[in-house]
Image 1 (spheres, rainbow, N blue to C red):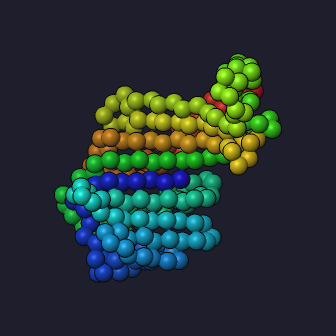
Image 2 (cartoon, rainbow, N blue to C red):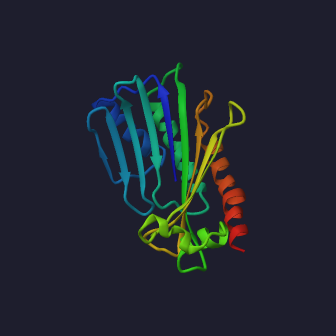
Image 3 (cartoon, rainbow, N blue to C red):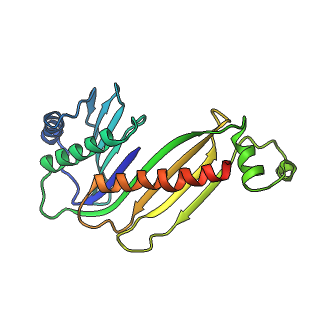
Length: 218
């Protein structure tokens, strides 16, 4: 699971802010393993017990900054990750306070693996869901290892996200579906609101995306 904020003005990244950001994270209970400071960039990584990556960068040449938080294996329920994102956002505000921050864009993404009863998830998708024959793919000339569906739902109001859902056979384990759901707010408003955004995304996955898959598979 991950969330990205792009805002203006960009943060001033130097040795002082590099150290201040680390101190603020620690004071807010965010533990990490390593921190690095390449040019225009601060990256904080926790390897265990729950992996976490925090990235603050200046987007060059655009005068914008990005805060990106990613958990590669978030525990469910996702409350712990949401709470950590809230603390990271506050640590960012502590380090780079400004009364004129303008949020330009926000994206939140949740990726899941879904077990199927079929040895090949793509066969279930292609033949059972879509009612296609296996032979209909022969025109492509080679055996098809996998594939999937992609849905894009536009935002219906300015304060709502565009939604993109991908459902694909997982190539590393052909019996599973790889599911990616992304919310993208092109006009995200003034407040970062990480809890509201992540909770809304997770609820959509649980109530809409997984229900869609279960209905097709039943």
